[in-house]
Structure formats: C-alpha cells, structure tokens
Length: 342
Ligand SMILES: C[S@@+](CC[C@H](N)C(=O)[O-])C[C@H]1O[C@@H](n2cnc3c(N)ncnc32)[C@H](O)[C@@H]1O
Image (cartoon, rainbow, N blue to C red):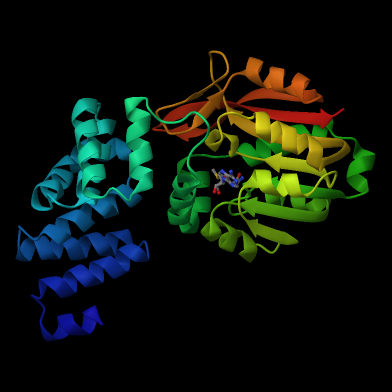
C-alpha cells in the first residue's frame, strides 16, 4: 500500500514512514533505514522518522556503535519530547556510553510519560537499586521475550555466541547413567524458549514437556516439532502440579530471571522421580548468595548452589565453569550444573 502511494506521490513523507515501519516490523532494517533517511531528506524535522530510525538502530546494531548513532537518538528525543520510547532509547545509548546520570534522568522521564510500561519501571528500579530481589516481574520477562522471539535463535547464537545448551548437554551426557538414558527419559524443559536446548535432549526422550512464560517463544518452539506438550506459564506451577513425574528437568539460561532459587529447587525435587536429574546453567556471582546485575539478570555464587544442593537433597555430579556467551562484547562466565536427586 505505501509503495503504491509513493508511485503516485514520491515526496509523501507519511507514506515513506509507513513503508519504513513495514520493513522495520519485518526486520528488513537496511530498507527501513533507507525509508527513514528519505523522510529526513524531505523534512529534517519529521519526528516519527527520527524515532523510527533510532528503533532500527537499537534492533539491528551492536550497542558498541552507539557513539556513532548518538545524534540520531538525541534528535529523536528532542523532536518527540512526549514520547517515552524516544527518551528510553536515548537513555539506553547514553548508558552504554557511560553517561549514567543523564541516562537515569531519561529513564525516569520515560516512566513518567508512560507509567504503564512495567518493563521500563523495572529497568529504572534496577539502576536505582530499588528492584525486588525476588525475581523479575513476569510481565518484564514476557515482554522481553515476546519481542525477542522471532530473532532469538539467530541473535543469541550468532551475535552473542551463545552455546550453553551444547555445553550443558556435553557435561550431562558424560555424567548420566547410560542404561537410564537408553530406557528413554521423561523430560521437562523449564523456560524452554524457542527450543534451542530441547533439540539437543530430544533424542533421549520418552516424552518432553516445555514450559515458558512467553507465548511467542512457545510458538517458535512449536515449529520445531520436538515437544510432546508445550505450556505457557510459570515453570514453578508445572512442577508443583506434577509430582514424581520426570527423569530429567533441564533449564538453560533461565535462572538468571529468577534470583532466589529455593522454591525452584524445592519443586524440582518433588517433581523428579527417584534419582532424577536436575541440570541447568547460571551466571557466576563472585560474592555470596546471588545478586541482580546491571544487565537485569541474576548471578549466583557457587557456594549458594552448594547450600541448595544440600538443603534439597541432591548430589552434585558436576559443576563446571564456562564462558556462556558475550555481553556487551565481553565474555559472560557461568556454571553448568548436573545434579541427581538422592
Ligand atoms: C534466555 S531464554 C533461554 C531459552 C532456552 N532455555 C534456551 O536455552 O534457548 C530464557 C527463557 O526463560 C523464560 N522464563 C523466564 N522466567 C520464567 C519462568 N518463571 N517460567 C517460565 N519461563 C520463564 C523466558 O520467557 C525465556 O524464554
């Protein structure tokens, strides 16, 4: 539709903006940027074009090129003073440039402008040190992964060099009783996401259930046709509802959104069959207990895991330290953990 309009009237700013938005939604970022540049060429003060230009950059470009694009975000913020998104975007870029105080003011302004955006509120609370340590609000996790689902596999594997599922699988397969594997496992994949871990463990299944808070992630997982059952919801609930049901509970890169793991261990222990396996990854915290990092993700200390292992009567078959993926260009270290219920 916008293309037709542009044939009739090639200088129509709204049509270029609309076409750019279509490309942006389809993640055709180069074409989208070309459209917004065209609008800006026609009218340097078109607020929508600057805002969408910034949205394209945030989606497609590693943040370490932030300094080159700063002007675009500043312009978007200036021309859209009442848009929370424009203020939030500029805040994100300034934060990556280490201009933290200015960034916080912008995050505060974004929340004032759009108080319903729970993700932004939480994001601000983390920076102010006032966020709850009980775990991230489910709306935050759902919002994050619903928006991420379509690009998740590509972004994580290629851009962030994420290979935790393979690392966890390798450790698991070395430690597990081969006879038990041959018999086939009833598997529960907590926070299954798009199924990146499920595809590795599937070959050992008698059955495999995946659960995730994000409907969109579940939709992508469904396309892989590896799960016998997929559930949208909180992982603790399914474990609560199904006592002594699983031979293997796995959870890759999910406890970073949980924080206090007492409940998780408790329900995992009750939902496993005797001698069942509990395998997962966490990001490493050098201190005691766990902490919420500036990345909005929790990190857990090895001593904290050890306490939980004893408290909930697991034995540790292996805890290995690995680089799990990149974060802001740096290695992110964590543990892959293989436990067995006693
Ligand atoms: C980084 S992804 C990892 C996905 C998958 N395990 C993998 O390795 O590719 C984290 C996933 O955990 C899900 N998640 C986080 N907290 C959850 C919870 N309490 N219950 C269910 N899913 C949760 C998110 O929705 C997201 O899909």
